[in-house]
Image (cartoon, rainbow, N blue to C red):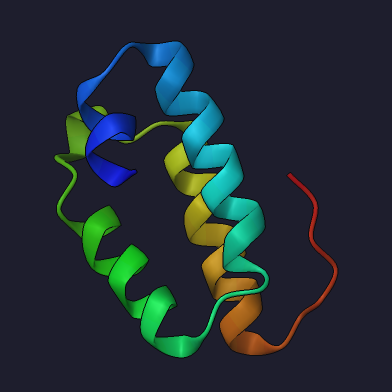
Length: 70
């Protein structure tokens, strides 16, 4: 899923990153660590709003903040 989000057309990327941001609110710690590692591997020039939204969802889940808004 990650490869499709980062290697395909922008529309696929947006949809997949939005879905991952939602899934991050339900994910286990191990899965959150995996997603965070993938986000860290993205070159800074390619980071966009949807990457940041995913990062925000991960951070909120880790801090226990259940109010999720994207």
